[in-house]
Amino acid sequence: MPRCARAVSLTGYYHVFDRGNSKQIIFEDDSDRYRFLSDISDRLARHKVAVLAWCLMDNHFHLMVDDPYDNLSKAM
Image: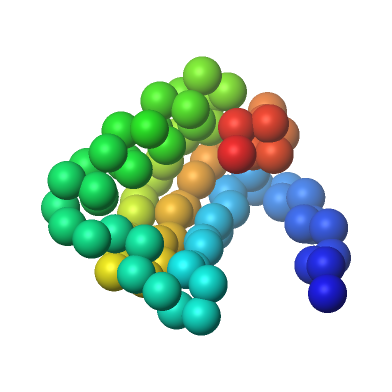
């Protein structure tokens, strides 16, 4: 079932998260985590979305981002 459209934040702050299918591991080791952080920070920076905080677990991640120009969908 599809999710509802994301509500636009008045502050520009968003909590972005994702989890592996059936809670599968998405980060095997620290090199996977470093690569993810490098890739996502480059992509978000190109669209002027700032990563404020992150938490990377074995099977999911959380990002707190600041998106003052409403570019989060383009960036992701």
